[in-house]
Each structure stands twice: as structure tokens, then as C-alpha cells.
Image (cartoon, rainbow, N blue to C red; front, side, top):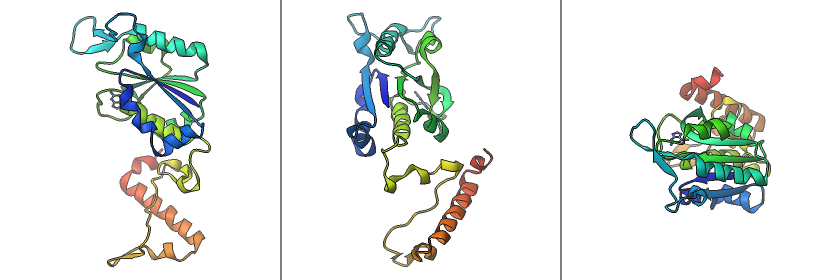
Length: 225
Ligand code: 6GU
């Protein structure tokens, strides 16, 4: 898989891909992540990427020209399955969308900024619009990092048995059960006894019950889906 991210703030997106699971996935060649500075695609000498909106109103809007140049330059090199625009008015991101996107080959992610992008960019180039929740961020960069992380960890070979995605919260629309590690007794606070018995069928049953209980208490909406 290859992810191309278009942004005016590539430095905000560097570090998430330089540590832990995402770094290992890149080092193993399971995914390529390329950051593109939108200003490099401007034709004016001030490298201006935004302008005032027609009709008046506060806030700058990203212009179509550099975005078109960047997207079309990428499309000339390879096929893309999806051109995603990160925006608070997009579809709310969830594990189902992460699962779907992890099956794609190459994707472009465009990060919005200021008041967003010229609507014609959305009409002409964008195939999917994603928000990461009902709150407003300064730009789409951190949201793009969130979406990329959720996708990359699902790619075959990225996680091992210890970090397996199969037992994640949200797989099967259930929250994950509680987990414990040593010591079994910490100043009188004990680990549930069942977990120390070695009776794996019973442990598995306990975990399923706990997952269901936790989901009922915290996220009953998931059980309706
Ligand atoms: Cl994708 N962008 C911005 N600017 N704010 C957001 C968001 C995206 N998702 C939630 N809030």
C-alpha cells in the first residue's frame, strides 16, 4: 500500500511515522507514506496556497491550482483507489472505514486548513470525505495521522500475535475486555482468579462476558448496529 498525504504542514505529520508500529511497517516495506508540501506546487513567487473567499467572510480558503497540480502529478505516476479529503463535515471515521481502506492499494489524503478548500476541489477530485469526530481541529493533519495509523496497523504482516488486531476493541462491534499483568496481587488488589487458572476455554468465556458487559455499560449504541 502507498499513502500520499498533501499538506501545508508536513512537519506536523513526520513524527507519527517515525516510531513504533508505523515505523516498523514502513521499514518492512509493507506501506510507503509520502508527504507532499502543497506550497511546492504553486506557480506564484510567494508560494501562496490560499486566498480570501468569494462573497466575503472570515477565513482563508485553499486554492484549486496547487492541489490540482499535486494530485494530477501523482495520478500520472500510478493508479489511486481513493482521494480522501480530511474535513470536519465528512463521514465520521470508524473501524469499518479503517477495515475498508486497509484493502485499498494506493490512496491520496488531502488535509484541509483554515476554512477548507475551494468546493471545486471536492467536486472534481475527492472520492471520500472523512472527519474523525464532532470537534474542530486546526487542520486535517492530525486527523490524517489518526486515519493512517488505523489503516496501517491492519495491513497483513504489520502486527504480530502479541499486537493482533483480532482482539481489538471495535472488532465485532464490542469493546475489549479488561486486561491484567503481574503482579497477581498488588497490595491486596487482586487479578480476577479465573485468569490465573490456565483453563483457557473458561478464560475465553469470561473475556466474552466482560466484553459484552463493558459494551452494554459504556457503548450500548454499538450493540444496536
Ligand atoms: Cl478531518 N479536520 C479538521 N480540521 N477538524 C476535524 C476533523 C478533520 N475531524 C474532526 N475534526
